[in-house]
Length: 354
Image 1: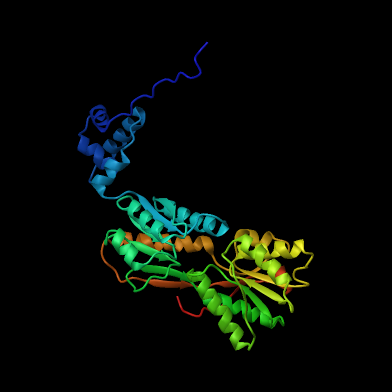
Image 2: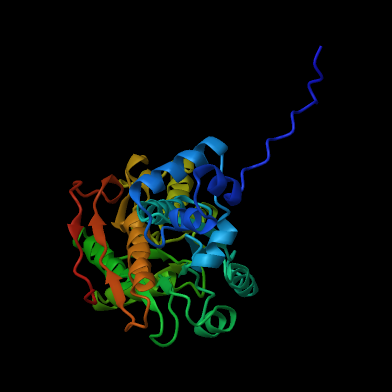
């Protein structure tokens, strides 16, 4: 009986010299084929590839990067990897990168400034370009921990100055448009569940809420949140104890709106009959909730794809370019949680042009 713990030693991988000898060419010719640099006759290229396949040769990625000075990898720094929003961002990044022959290397800063700098140092020399989506990142951290020649695109990250390309959302316009929508439904006591302190998206959405309420001569009702479902549930229980109770609650993201729905449903408070709940982001599950969630829509996967597209443009230019700064518009997605008749997404006028 064979020993189940016995394993046949793996066959050693073929070397580039063995491929060259078998194909009857020089090592330099094999190198040109796999690095796609320099002229090689079609019949010679085909013969080398056939020999490499038969011998099981795989070019060493590290050695190849030394000769081409390219890794074929794009770095991505996110504040967190949890939740549907970041899953959609990563999906958009990955699809766009793979279409252009790149892989992505994703890391999280866990919303910690020292971790941001540690991740940046770890990525040095391992990526051809970098996408940064982190509220803790700043110009000093980027310049101190990365080569000055590394192409960088900031995604929803506010950094002083204009040295880096950036793509941001019109958070302010989206939030103020949602308040106007709720006011149009007759709401005047509208509570707002805030995002984490120091988060740029949260601050811009809060400003949109406050300015829109001020234009309606309505008093703000603000509750603390951190973008998590748990903080939404906690805020929902706080709202249930208020007198008078708000007639509508605007959560700074959909995850917190889900927590609000849970708290209200558990207490027997009907949405939207007794209270309206709306969110921000339009994560995929929002349309499948009970009731379906009215929200400010963000093309989340497209946000990642746009960042990859711009980064590749910078990488392929090979020379310094004037940085570009884009602001993507949001959309109002009306569903059952606000009590209005559902409609297709309609464009929200952007406060700033792209």
